Image (tube, rainbow, N blue to C red):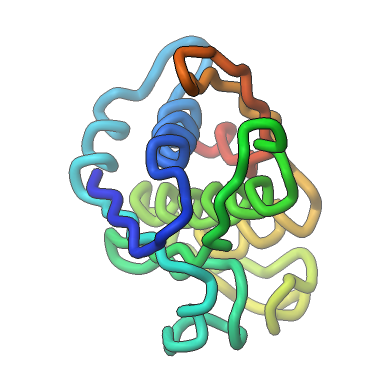
Length: 179
């Protein structure tokens, strides 16, 4: 998987590790990883990370400027807050908000990769302009419904900083039961 950063302040090593950990654990189920789908997803999908100030220039991004993303054909564009964070406050609001966006858009990508494109009815009004009952692709509707319903899980991972291991925890969107 190619991950390209067009940001200045994000800790690229940390964000690469978050992305990798989330994808790996999403494809894992019952202590067995679906290596075939994991390898193919990693081989064929790309992630491009921009600062949130560039979101307004994307015609597919709903909103003016802000944190979010656009998932298309084998490509995920993320618009994240481009802020330096210290390890004393690693789980500050900026980092957590960025990770939720990352997990949200990767969930769209994984469901698209798995062929979940049948039309379904949205269960809730989403945070965009879609209303309950709107017919959307499953890969969109299910992710938005789960996000609105607060279906997250706590992802834990170790990150080494200055030769000191730190156990980090953050909330991510839950779709492991669909994979």
